[in-house]
Image (cartoon, rainbow, N blue to C red; front, side):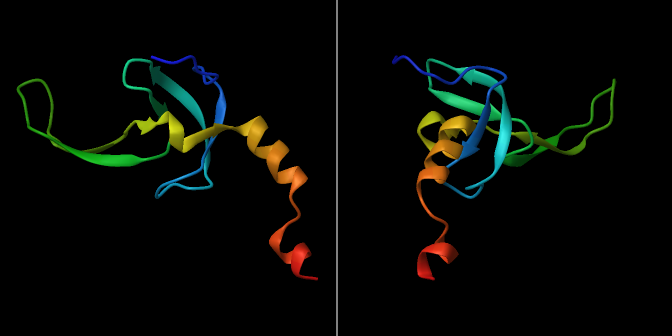
Length: 91
């Protein structure tokens, strides 16, 4: 396990994968697997079997993302401030 700067409640930006560029709040962080669950991102569908207590169906929930694919929002903003926007760089 390595030390990390990401904690529960931090705002992060996804820097790789299908959700690239999106921001969200960290719901949970698994230190052993180095995976982060972000609120409202990386949604997957799960099929639930009907039980005596409740009805089954298809639900969506957040799946964890590896911590190497996310960056703290403050660091992301600082790096963006240093680099000019693509449109401004072409002019």
